[in-house]
Amino acid sequence: MVAADNLQKMPETASFNLAAYLQERKKLCEAALDESLPVIYPEKIYESMRYSLLAGGKRLRPILCLATCEMMGGTIEMAMPTACAVEMIHTMSLIHDDLPAMDNDDYRRGRLTNHKVYGEDIAILSGDGLLAYAFELVALRTPESVARERVLQVIVHLGRASGAAGLVGGQVVDLESEGKSDIPLETLNFIHNHKTAALLEACVVCGGILAGASPEDVQRLSRYAQNIGLAFQIIDDILDITATQEQLGKTAGKDLVAQKVTYPSLWGIEKSRAKAQELIESACAELEPFGESAQPLKALAQFITSRNH
Amino acid sequence: MVAADNLQKMPETASFNLAAYLQERKKLCEAALDESLPVIYPEKIYESMRYSLLAGGKRLRPILCLATCEMMGGTIEMAMPTACAVEMIHTMSLIHDDLPAMDNDDYRRGRLTNHKVYGEDIAILSGDGLLAYAFELVALRTPESVARERVLQVIVHLGRASGAAGLVGGQVVDLESEGKSDIPLETLNFIHNHKTAALLEACVVCGGILAGASPEDVQRLSRYAQNIGLAFQIIDDILDITATQEQLGKTAGKDLVAQKVTYPSLWGIEKSRAKAQELIESACAELEPFGESAQPLKALAQFITSRNH
Image (cartoon, rainbow over all chains, first blue to last red; front, top):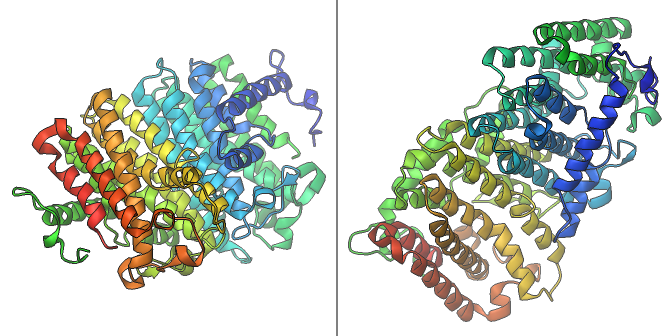
């Protein structure tokens, strides 16, 4: 597998340097996230929200959103509020999923989880604050150059991806499946389509909508995202088995200990890896009509299967 | 005090029957809420969301939203998605505030709290689901007759009222103040402006915005709402002392037991009641320019001080 800290070794076409691209976009996203959430009274809640929101991470979701908007002819400025919003929604779900009443995790991205630092009460409220702020930000800050109807469509997609039809629904079925070793593939797919793919899809689809993509192109983008979403989860499951705690920044081997049904537990590691690669190829095939400008999204898809944390 | 179940005794002008008005509007809101959230897979989360959302209550917030929209020349249809959204946001805050990590309440509206029935994990997720769905609903269902820019403004107000600048911020300071008997009036005002008044204000202001109210009228509506918001909280504090558990549908006397600083603890019951009445009069004065059509909002303001649960 490709070393995490050596992005120069990443798959790369003649004219596209993914490592440099990711680094530059990550910097842009982090500056926008930092700027979006100043610390005011009552400081503790803003500090707690910032603790998790600015805890690093690959920023894959906002980068996907920006990249799709640009591919479809839009600008970074058009998509940045939505890019920040998807990272806020993602962070909310991590904070809440880590709570003692849920997955009870002490570490996340190599640091103590939000509730270990700020307490459960503040952690719950931080998630709520990030979720509410995500919608406010999109409605307030998306530039006037984007038709207002498009902004509303983005809000619909973000709402659906965050709630019972998305992240929340996936987590519910995940919690119900805990400790059961006879989860059918259908249920496993439901969990990951909702916990992982739904928000990735919203990132990509919203980026397209903001740029004015046609309904047909939005369908293509949606299929691209669903494929990379599932591949992403398969790789996550593999990494839980093969990577070290240090590489993951969170407890490794949790799925095995919890006797959780995962793709590798159903298919084995090699077949899972092949399936992920197949999904990535299907994803990239969806982008053929967009020609050269699809390079970043194709490279991002490849990056997902080659990452090691 | 006026008997709860005898709304015919409510203050009432010659031409306006508040009891009938409230009953009719409540029915409309409950039908819309019921219809907005069907039970699908995974059923448990939708049942949990519905358990709290359809648990009765006065539906004051959605009724305020509809009434303001109508007063400003709009229709019920224009405001109904937003009216449902404010009730979802309110319900989310009740579910999360009741959690063991927060106020640890076993009863709400005379029934077991959400986490006592569905568990803490599902209760947290139900709140998240309701919050996300509130925004989706407004963006998706507000009729085309409302300019899209107005819908975005509504989403900004709802986001602000729900998050760290509203409900969440108020709850943080409330939690920080717990067990302290030397809370200054300024802090008490902050808590209630954020925990109670912010969402009431959003209900009224959003109703106005949907109907196309001018910025000046929105300012008036905002002052009306802030006044009734504070009055509402003062009356809540008084009822915690004077009402029975049966009347409240939740544990009575909690503030005294928790040695919580409240308006009656600072001012005494009689002065608190007078202050609430003053606030209601200021609120109604803001509505003078709207003439006869302000009757429902004026009656609603009076209702707040005369309620006994």
